[in-house]
Length: 116
Image (tube, rainbow, N blue to C red; front, side, top):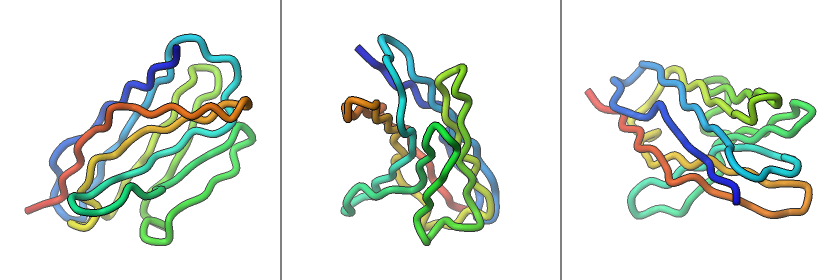
């Protein structure tokens, strides 16, 4: 069983920064992709950023240039550095993991609120 444990959410002012962390624990055979999704009230869950084992990344257009995803393969961790944050970044952020067997796992989510 794989568990994803997120941390680092909270309240930040517009223009501020936050760093999210996600640790994958449990019976992990092989991790292909780790990423972050978010879901705002009344909206569908959307991809924010993802990174594969080789370090290749994808970002949503809305966060390019402001957010940076990184991972530590040895520790099975993924991070999301969020800078120049905007009120529209307010959402519950979910960590996601896909292994080489195409099994997907989700964290429980962490609330991020951007407000003055």
